[in-house]
Image 1 (cartoon, rainbow, N blue to C red):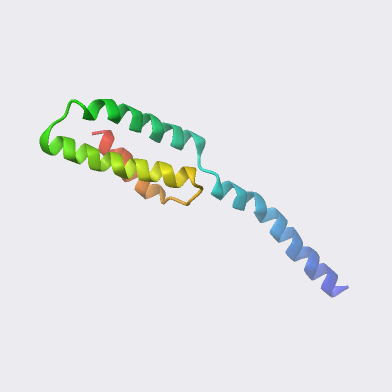
Image 2: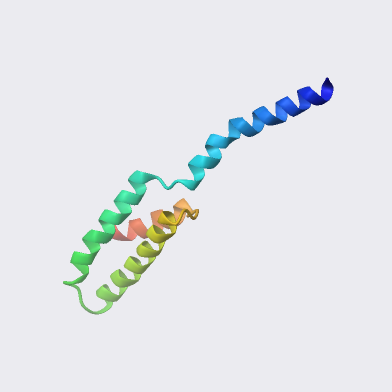
Length: 91
């Protein structure tokens, strides 16, 4: 009887934590959409830049593209990385 109660408690704990597992693997749709829009906007803006400004924007674009691809692939991305890259575009 004690074994059955222990098994039931473990099973309930696993079932209760499953939605959290599923949620972690799915990228936040709003964040991904914002990142894709920013990437699209920067494609247009970078065409008008030259020199060091252009180099900096192109490097930030590469970082942003990498993050978008990682999110689409289902990889986990540190929110600080996303904030750092998006902060560059809000300047």
